[in-house]
Image (tube, rainbow over all chains, first blue to last red; front, side):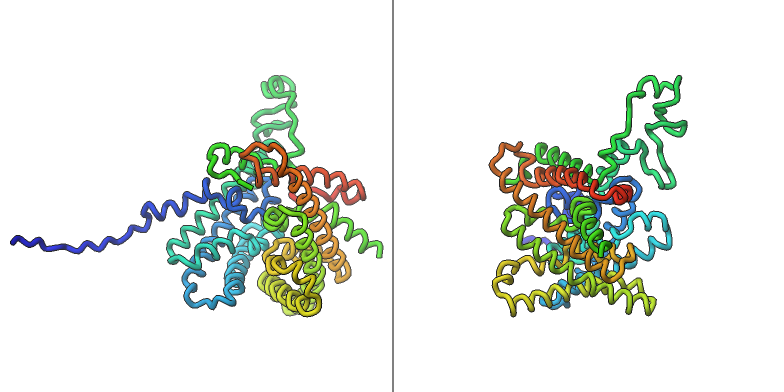
Length: 242
Length: 202
């Protein structure tokens, strides 16, 4: 009887297997923290009137979310159930303090502009929601990826909202950053110059005026509502039944 | 006294926590489906904001600033808020079971309501005095209360309207909040001097 020697293949799961990638890509669209899970709408929409602060805010949230998930997941078997919320809050608050002090040292103007909203990442429901829903029950590496994914999904919405608000409200993009772009407005600096007579921008876009509604904070609500509308008509499975 | 009234009105109507700063948005969207529960949560928020504000002011002034450990502010504030919510919960349960039953579920939720921590942080950045921070806390809480009651009432009615399926629920809530924000903007006519300072998102 011929016997085949069984070679035992220890399948080591690669660090970026398909399952792990899904953790990062899923929150970007179909399970977006803001538009689907309704987490974390609170603290940061007020910063979206310009793109640059939105980008900085997104980076901060990705950082806090990823590392809070990682540390909570490492400690998950040691945390007593009764005090887990307080432990989580301490982890988050420590990370946010780090971000706050770092930002103050690196870029003071943007720190001033974001004011209390960096501190409010502590009570941002995404961070805590993901800790409760994911990090308390999963291994550290997976939790870390989940944190990055959810932070990025949140950042994506912030940047999209910031893009529309800044472009239509001020005619610029990334104003205040090292690479500001002046798209449309009155003056020589802008790519489309709407006021100087004789310029092609004046001939074709002389009627254009910045939309002041976009500068106001309510504009963020309308833009998100439209995003939700678009997303749910594209994928009817996401429609609210209530 | 006029100062306090001014701050109260300003924080309740002109710089409304929800409609101008988006603070406490999560519970605002989640709990505004029925008027009754919205009422309970609104009351709880006024209560907790009014209590945590002066306590955080005292701690900030006499401990954090005094010993130059301002970088601990976030941790200390959130700890104070968490323990105050716990304390309030126990006191209410002991002395007023009726109110406790009404607020029951919402009290613990308030710990992670951004409006509470946001109020304390605004108090620090704006350098309010003790009295002003009490007025700011009560006013902010009252504004939050008004906003959640209004949206809950509208959402109760709109459930019977023919809203496009994709907008139903969350999408409509966002649109309504935006429209209410616009309506509240007209209240900024109360004090022309304050209007110049509006547009918090700048």
